[in-house]
View 1 (cartoon, rainbow, N blue to C red):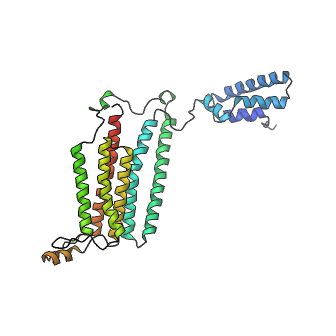
View 2: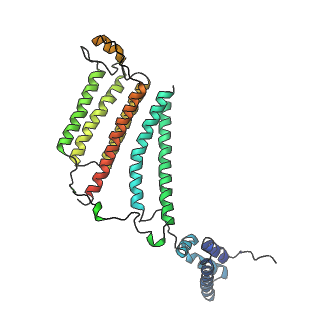
View 3: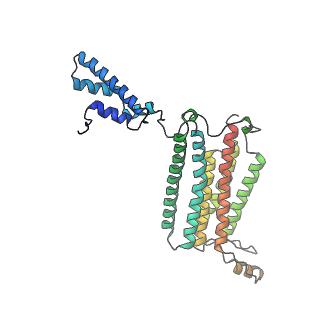
Length: 326
């Protein structure tokens, strides 16, 4: 005897609702749905409706079977619930701001130092790697939190992942977290560096030590000096606002990454620095070899840019925490 094939609309609807329900729930739900649909069909037929149309209307009235299955099964209709969502958002804000600039600068440095590819090819490769990394970050972080959400007991789904205590409150909640003295130092330091770089790129003359190459393209000179002036302007803006914000931190990250990439590119082309031993010999008559490897210079550039970028992101995060209740 062959088993009966489910061909009716009711059979298909009940199967769709109960196919993923636990074995101890599915049969009861199936019986309940069949009874509900049968009662609705009988009522419509008694009112003069066609039996086929009556069944279709009864099933349509129950709604999407997947939604109904979630209601019966007690499964959440979302990937990430309110309990873990704040932690998810915090991580999605901090990780890209730290990881992506580091990946961009590191990849650009590695390509510039080890390949003979042109600037366009190196930039495109770095962009694609950053894009791929961003997609992987978003995917894996989202997947991790979705797994956490779906494996938590139902009674704990609205609870945060970590217990909060009053000890986590900041000792002070001033609206202004950036001080005038700190701003004056940062602006002065950035302007001094801009002046020093402009002096070097313009040719020091006299008894000055020419470290930076004054023969690079004028566009690169403007961008290098401009990056320090942007830092000075950003410090003034941050002081005016009173704190580091996600926007100002993002601008700082982009500025640092752009300046680092430009310097690494010039360094890889032997256009950033002069021949220091020759310069010292001609200026002071020194015979000591003062040469520095390009790799060491590249490491210093990446380290300084990464440190400044990460520090601004952390300051923005601390400022956000400190001003939420101010």
